Length: 140
Image 1 (tube, one colour):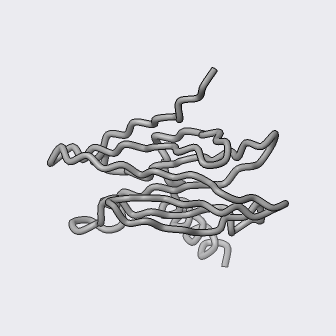
Image 2 (cartoon, helix red, strand yellow; image 1 turned 30 degrees about the vertical axis):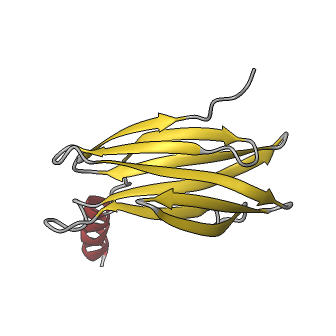
């Protein structure tokens, strides 16, 4: 019985690798400020941008608007676990799923002093894109 558990533990440790969110950035935004993530596909040099802002916050929920490839999205995020993350597919995985996929994860981290904190994580195991993070310009 212990040999079976040892083999099971070995396979579990081999196949349960933690995803590598290599480029990661935290944005702090006031209401209606736009943040932008510029994504350049290395193979075709095609540039896209993922833009987002927040418009309304109550004690736990926040309304977020995003634009990617000219498609608007409107969703609600929360400080509750499991409701604080949004996933946007960037490049599909045609050749070697799931190692070839590129995804952007937008996570609502917190709200303090009329500023919302968002973390943007990029899952790109095969290094197919270049990423640039642009914060909003604030008046001084």
